[in-house]
Length: 447
Picture (tube, rainbow, N blue to C red):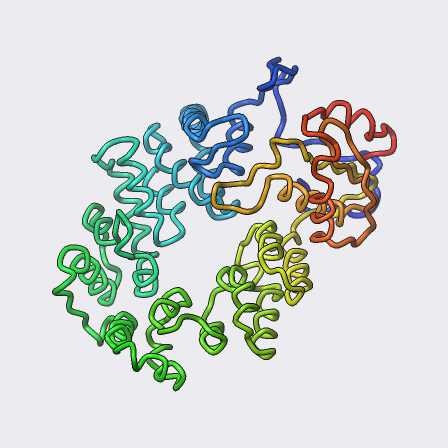
């Protein structure tokens, strides 16, 4: 897409890098269609692929196999494109599991500069372990040198005291100590050398772990807190002991440490330490606990802050998910503002735009087994965001039939998604796009 259109265009821009070939084929249900080229198919697949999740027409196993085949095909035909695409997939498109699989299969397919690609792709401290786990499941226990060295490079950037406290849980099959043992990263400072030793000892000799409080101050503070008897914990918390700041506590840790769980006082104390996504996911908990107005105002200010929205890199549908999960109206306007901010890079389309949201049966499945959000809701949010930026718009819901829905300039994206939600089933459950397009697209009017 162009970054921005200014004013009316005499010749509308109808080009797109995503396009079909002239090779005729059929859809899953036998309707005529045209095939995509491998790069286009891979791109469309990768930016929507929740790895291991089934889709309406494919099992998870079949989807994963098709994804791997495409990764190998494109790596062999255009490795330079893949070398640029995979880090983009992780760091810009924010597709975490798909990019881990892509990095592994790039190595398996013999792509050049694999070490650099792996290091550039891994972005969260638990991803080195995920990459190793995936490789061993799919390709065996021998790790290729580009994979090992790329992971080791990433570890130097990703492993610190905070990440060790958050991601080295004993319930994980692959621990940080395992990753260090397999890849032999070089510590970049004295503190990281001490951290690596701590993680290795914690993995192999947990009862004998010794922590140097001068070098690993955060981990030592957390250990001190965990040793405090339960009967004394709430008193210490209410006193606001400086140990809590030193220990880099999280709400998850506090909820397990504090007797009686998370009441209003507990939330009010920990909220200033919570990250953006944690705040977004806990709005219902804040309501149920009854946090005070001052703390609620702080939460609203953080969630609707333009810089925090940009840095959070949340998909727009995450704000709709939070809106659905928090039944009170305390957060609706804040989430509306944050959702609008998260769509800031959508271009302002000049002229007359036709936006069509698929509400057929296949779109009514959730985006993953653990999600409450359906595909049609993601489509509705994206469609509404495009419509909100368009100069003039025709907004359509379609399945077997179609309905032109009213849409005003500046209409709420959240409310529009709600409108689509209420429309589900009214146009049937099939996917008759040709009929909907023929009935709504006006040549010479729509740009």
